[in-house]
Amino acid sequence: MIEKKFTPKRTICKVTFRVPEDWAEKEVAVVGDFNEWDTEANKLEQKNGSWETTLRLSPQSEYRFRYLLDGERWANDDSADGYATNPYGTEDSILVIGS
Image (cartoon, rainbow, N blue to C red; front, side, top):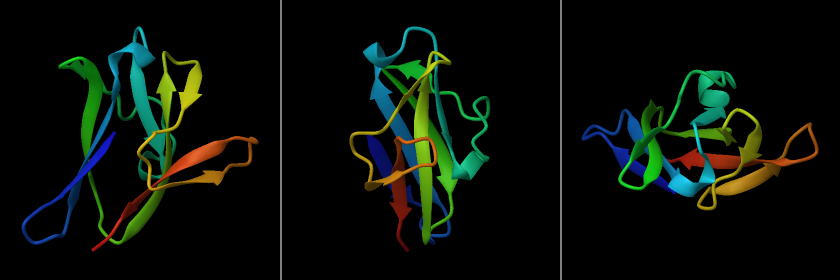
C-alpha cells in the first residue's frame, strides 16, 4: 500500500510504503529511482503487522520502484499508480506524485 501526504506548501510529498508482514521473514527494502536502486538505502520496519517506511519525495515526479524481500525476491506494490516493463523482463511499480 502507498500513502501520499503533501506538506502544507506542497514542496515535499511524504510517501509511506507499506506491505503485509507475511511478505517477508527478515527484511524488506524499497528500491527505486529515488535511491538509485540501492538495496540498503531504505529498509522498511515492522510496525503494527506490516513492514513500512516513509520517504520524502519531490512533487511533479514519477518514480520506478520495487520491493526486495529477504534480500532475494522482488515484488511490486499492488497499489502502484502503474507498472512498466524493465530491462530484466519483469515489471517495475510506478509511483506518480502530482503537484
